[in-house]
Image 1 (cartoon, rainbow, N blue to C red):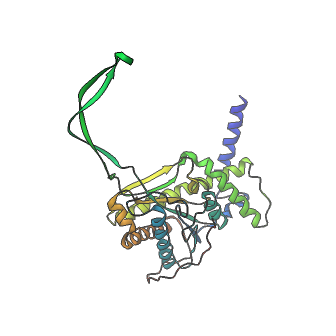
Image 2: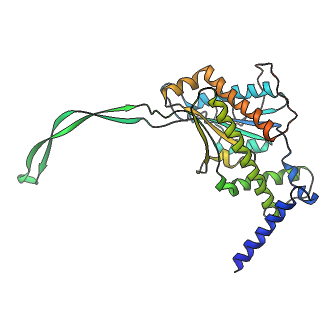
Image 3: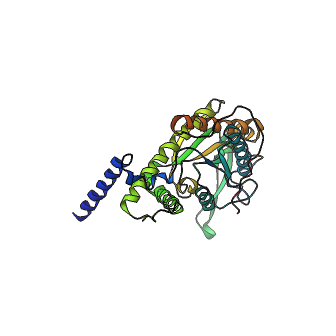
Length: 324
């Protein structure tokens, strides 16, 4: 009975927050912790340094990720000169996974885009090539008897896994409360930085508001991920869709207090995909697809003072990186 009463009280608080969120001035104390618009984008090149990631026939995931991430940053800077670009790494270093999320939160990112390459094990092919004799024994010691029998003989060949294409991951909806803890922490930090009262992050009302923001971030992440997949398909890439991740270790999706996506650009274990991922054309196409998705994302649900420009430049963004 007591447990039911507690749940009812908590549910009432959540309903009050939802109904009053847009109208009551008192409820906006934490809302401005995430201001509208896109001012900062964090770009994360997966793996790096001592962690090569997946291996292809002639390349590694860490190298492909960095090349695409740098091209992506340049293209975003060209399209939106007013948006700040921060990279978790700009060279062959390895920032710890936790450090990447901390870095994104510390720099008040409005979007987090992580670049990775997928992998699939080789497939085993067995071909019958005839019979061979096999020796076996029965009984033991002096009574041991040697036998021979005819068995099928196969030639085993390991082939490239045919799996290929691009897919984009977001943090799973059924793990919203986990990400909400990090959203709440960032909200509290932003309030303190604004010289306002220090909030109690364990307060039910505060938790309810952080959960609302987390659900907004899920929707925005889903939107951006969907747009990325639509745009990359226009380049003839196999669209493997948007997928939700909740496995242990996907820290850059779980711990970033902002809309976050992880793009598995292609399968480095597939010959065609590996060739595309290592080509300048393929890397530019992948970066371009993400930039076009960001433009559509801004037009659909976000307003920003940064205006896209049509003239291309090759200027690099001098942004700090996380040290390993």
